[in-house]
Image (cartoon, rainbow, N blue to C red; front, side, top):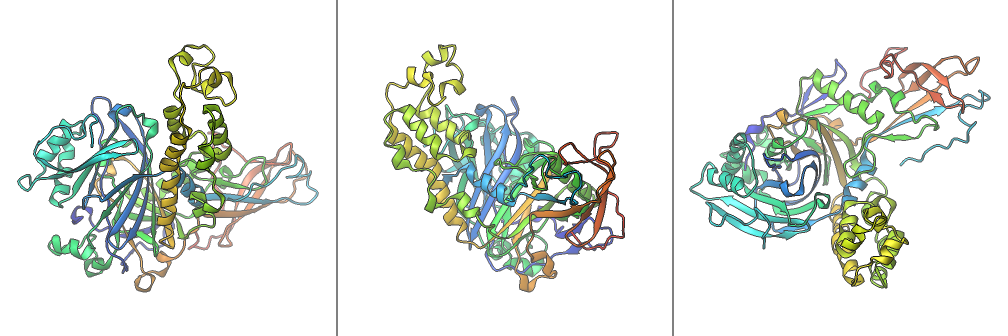
Amino acid sequence: PRCRETNSVDRTVTDRPNMLVTAIVIAAAAAGARACGGFFCSLARPVVQNGENILFSTDGTEVTATIQIQYQGDAADFSWVLPLPSVPHKFGVSSDALFRALHAFTDPQFIVNVTHPTDCFDAGTRCEFRALGGVAATADGAGGGGDAGVDILSMGEVGPFVYTVIAARKDDARGKALFDWLNTNGFDQPDSAAMIVTRYVRLQHKFVTLKLQKGKSAGELVPIVIKYKAPSVADALAAAGGEAAGGGGGAATAAALSCIPLRLTRVAASDDMPVYAWLAGATRAVPSNFVHLKVDVRDMPWERCYRGGFVGGPVFAGGFSPFGGTNACTEEYRELLKRVAAKYTSSKWLTTEYAGAYPAGLLDAVWDAKSVRIDTAELAKAGDATDFLQRLLQQLPFEQRQSPQVQTLIRRFVPQSDAAKADAQCKSENAFYSVGGRCLRDFAPASFDAAAFAAAIDEEMVQPLVDTRAELERHAYLTRFFTLISPAAMVRDPLFRFAAAAGHADAAEVGDVSNVHRVEATYTCPATKSDAFALTLKHADGTTSAIDGVMLGYCGELIMPRGDDGRPPPIAWPQPVALGGG
């Protein structure tokens, strides 16, 4: 397969005006891997995709892709299509705990570490402040249509999904029959998507189509794991008549490629859709055909990242959910990224937010066999549903207790009866599933299989995490990318290559990237508590900036200034800034 439509825009830009825009030439040591595809929607009742998490792990030509999407819409309208270079040889599901852990350990952190003057109105200590620590298919549309001009290569069910793998026949060179099959079987798409499908058909890609099984809800959208073989880049180039995949000439034949599915995603994506991608390999990954954006975090409005009422403490740009989160600091960080991208008139960009060895604790956060959180053998001993849920509540980490995956399992094995729904006090799920309450006692299921419930937890929650940790342990290096992208810009699938430091034109491009950004803040004690003062920020490169108009609060905390629009004023730079930082 080839990516001739991607163009070669392999460049890195930084937000300092006198920094050069450089072309990247990479010599990598592994075979190529690509995983291109996207997401279709129903035109009658649109489904909106508004987030995507992807973890790629490559070993030679073997690719493991774990993909999770976030979308808005009815479960009955959910449909998803992934073009791949070969027929997948294994499907599985994972847990959102994986991406929760990846976010927790690689989300950007912005830390304002304030040193208060001694004997300054008990600043920072009056109210006992504490610093925060760092930190066979039968569902609608699947398998239907019979012999409709496509080759059906495999069918099955995995987790809540039902899948069908199809390919265009030899006499369908433009993929029209395949395109019609997608429409006939509920994978509705506009006519503008036909050209995209044609491109994949000409590359001899196979199409993995997924829907939710009957009776499944949108809340059951767990990450899906797909394993498949990808041809080496050298073989891909030969099949493509010798054309370089990314315009890199001979160097590209040795490059390792991965690809985020975006082109088909444009059919249902929201504006400024956040996309997070992690690539596990032997070395750092770099984008091949998207602008590689580098921002100077000194330009962050740091006052928006100060945790009011706390002495310093990190503010995470994404939060701890499987798709990150938003806060004032997050919004400012994303606005900074968009301003830098606009400066270079780029709507197709990626920024590296972390690159390095696995952060300490990440693998254990995915799964720690030495301190098993979920003891399924103990759960299987439960005498009834109440006893089981009590044990489960004690075992689950706080952040997993209300996860859609856990709630789905509870509904399956402890269903809420019609009698419970008719009871005024027990009709809500919150009341019915309250451990220790009368609802579970009075309306307990007539039969309860603790062993089957425990086995399902092991199969659907525990083993996927065990397998994911084992997959991650096969590699030593992790790179995280982030972008905000709108449908109009989804005209190419972002490609990545694993860099080899020895042959790289710019050694800095293959160095580690920290996700922790810290400033040291100091100030001179004002004459009175009602006087405003300047907060001096010392950045990692030794340069300083200032925030004027800061005041002390009742408890000695810092109260940051706000402009007429309620937003912080621009940062004032009291001295010339040495370029090259950030």
